[in-house]
Length: 276
Image (tube, rainbow, N blue to C red; front, side, top):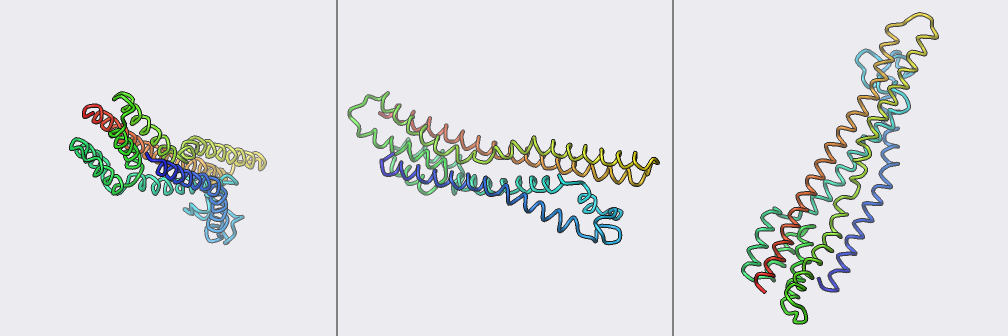
């Protein structure tokens, strides 16, 4: 890669990385505030409760009222669920842009065909047309490939090594951008379930304490309290399940792009070794 191109690529990656970092820091307080607003304004609305008062029991079948009675962990769990959705859409946009404009397998095959025909300039132009992370890495390798064709101070093995090294450096710039913020999904997949169970434990303690203080079992109050407590478990498990599904979806997509980069890099190096 030329001296002018590599700093530009690093600058673009740094800008993207800064955006992802800023997104991670900004989104957490935002989703927690949104979770609290949903909890207090929507779930706490009087229409879901007896006497139109959220201090009373929820109306029969009013899930919103039962969620409101779930306790102080409910808005946190709602915020965590919104965090999962926010990361999902942010990663969808990033990985969609990283894939480029066309099919990656077709792009890799076209690059291989152009190299076999000794048409390096057309291969570079194809990278500019494709765009995305795979194209950026392949373009870096192709530019070094073209440079090594006219290099006279190195033997064949050194030239192949230079091409391979350039592809590895370009890959190290691209992959961190693709994996940014996935740690949030990995963390939420574990924490959300624990938060839900914690809320359930608090709700059960509250229910049995109320029953013990009255001296007589109140089946309606007890069953309502248990239902309210289990709302936390339902929120925690559903949030965790979504985080796991999204995390596996993104890692599969990233693995596919990594494989395409490896395949293209190997093809570039082997083509150079066979033709020079």
